[in-house]
Image (cartoon, rainbow, N blue to C red; front, side, top):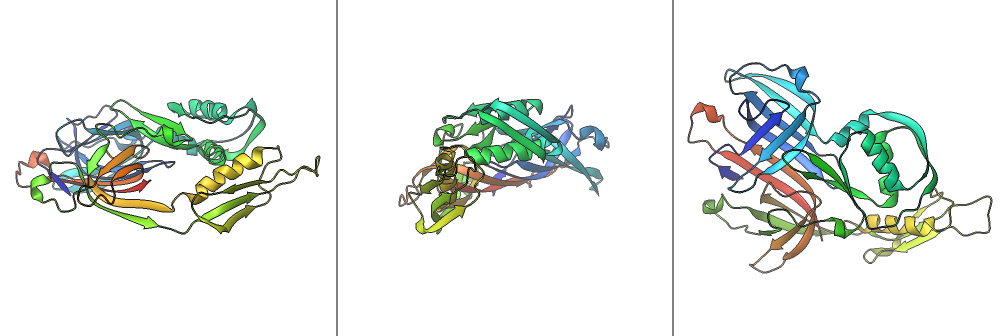
Length: 350
């Protein structure tokens, strides 16, 4: 873990800022095409109790820093607050911070969309939920004659549409808000902010604790399917072959994913759907995992690994998941011997 001699982590919840709240620790997980979830433990600096119910649903901002320079922000909303009891004479609290997209999981509907493409439907549903969205889509999306949402949450509905079309998502954070980014090609992944390159330094000692670096990295190769075959049937045109097939560049061809009925009847849809399924099936054939002292690692961005010792891991990778953890002492106690600690674990794709 990296040690930091000044408060490295802070939180703002609603009208309560860092001058009122002191963070004692936090943990969080974020990844591509998943809802981030951060748990932040804190107490009031003046010892006064908080009206917990007033905090639920408020905007929240978590600030992470382990070195001089621009901090990393995680912006979201508070979905729950726990009262953890008294410790060292102070009432402790825990806030669960999630994206605004999470709210769509609490809204269930049944409705029909007509004459709209999937991106248009996504923008409509996300806009209703107050989700700020940025489209980084490169593909072509035809309008659907109709599209049904039936007895499912808005989140389940948009997730289903994105999975079918091969659309992934991640989040951009600032000190004032967060944006949902929708992508379908590698071009949607921008370089990691504040510099995309981080060094792999497994042998660094205590003299380097104020620098950002990767402390460990390993690669895993997995056996994955190499072919997809989708088939369906149009009873109005029984002679028309609407099947779709795909072969992965990597994977074992004998390991085929076959699906019938695949859920479509329009000609041409099968080929596109098979391409999406093939790509999804082959992802994970080679992945990297490691640990780092770098809170700015964010899923959806490109990281370049500087591996000078042997060059084994040198190259660019997409960050797919980061698990953060950090603790820091009560800075109001006046203790100079205690220092904040931070570390993370991450997953990468070539």
